[in-house]
Image (cartoon, rainbow, N blue to C red):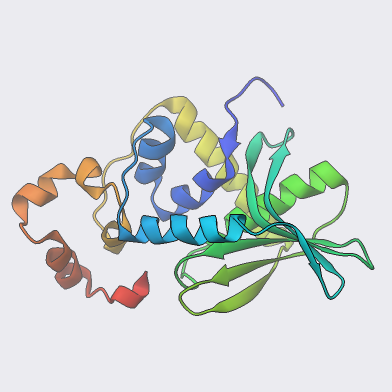
Length: 210
């Protein structure tokens, strides 16, 4: 890889959710907590606090650091499963909510797998997303289409961060779940005293969407 900025895997998920949010967090180092991010932090702390273990022929390693020199990616897996009989690896990502209509979670998971492939030389065909809200694990095929989408997202994030530009604000239902909305769009708070109700009415948002 040339001397370029290393992209954090977590930035890919933020970029697909909202490119402006990605620029603010990873370019301007802007961050704030809300109840959704706090729940996510607690979930990941709980996952990371458990030591390595072996159950039914599967080894479970937590908080595994990964990188790809080729793609200029770096990050951390919530959980890495290894089948001790075959040696097959599978990354597992924990999420606070439920499956989404966009591919942010799948792209993040695929990026983790691409890093593992470069580090181990092993082809990784599947990963899994575990959603706390529905208490359900979703297995993901890491196919050619998802891999291409992931690589394109990596390139877009790197281009965005290197440009040091800030995408124009776009009001959408995603704003409801964004912890930095008052930093991103402070005028909304001035114009609407009850911002949550305004967004709910504007987009007919159900809490279960997040």
